[in-house]
Image 1 (cartoon, rainbow, N blue to C red):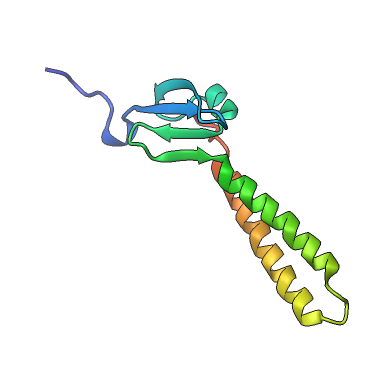
Image 2 (cartoon, helix red, strand yellow; image 1 turned 180 degrees about the vertical axis):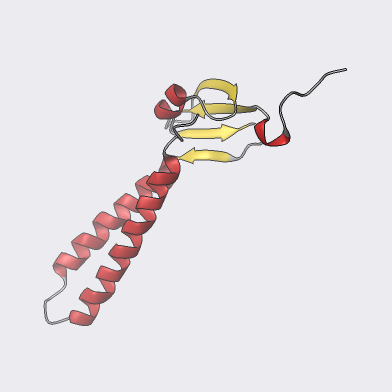
Amino acid sequence: MQINLLNDEEQTKEFLYYDADGIYIGRSEGLGPDPHLYSQAHYVFDGDSDMVKNLDILNISRKRLISLRKTLIAVPIKDMGKIIEINQQIKSLEKDIDMLEGSLSLPEAI
């Protein structure tokens, strides 16, 4: 008989790490991802195949932000409605990027 000394919230998980090309770079077990492998990985999955880290979404958002800024520069000053609209889109996208970056940070407690 196996005795579980960890409660349900503290069960160890398996984490799988892949680079930007989808090549496997490592595996770890624990309460959270391994900090060294996590920082190197482009994609991280847990043992339940849930995505823990995906840098593609962040990169796409950053490219979209650059595109919006270029579009804003090209808008004539007379078209204030369009300028305001693009500025609102930029502000919203910057907020989303900040949230994504925050969610990709490895918690210090791990």
